[in-house]
Image 1 (tube, rainbow, N blue to C red):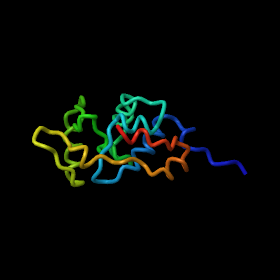
Image 2: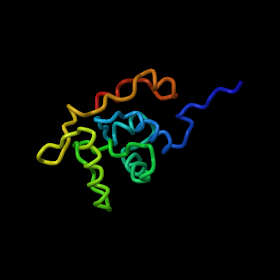
Image 3: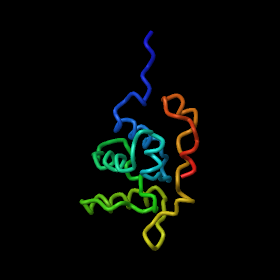
Length: 129
C-alpha cells in the first residue's frame, strides 16, 4: 500500500491554505508566522496566497495579518474593510490606532501532532516570532 503524501509534497499555496485553515476563529496569525510554519516560503508569498483566495473558499484569509498587528492594505479597499468586519464578528477587537493586540489574539500555531502528521517540521522555534 502506497503511503499517503504529506502536505509538504503539495504546491506551496495548498500548504499555506492548509496551515491557515488551522487558525481558529477569534485568533490571528502573521504572514511571517505562516511562512515559517510552511517552510521554504516568505511572508510575501503568504500574502499573495491570501489575495488569491476567493469568497467561496473555506480558507479563513481574514485571520492573517501583518507583523504590526494591522490589516495590510489591498488595492481593493472593500476587501480591507471586509477583513476588519470578519475579524470583529469573530470577537477580535482593534486598538484605537487600528491594530490588533497580538499578545492577546495571536494564534500559537498548529499542535506538534498536526505538524508531524502532515509532514511539517515540528521544531517550535517559529512559535517565538
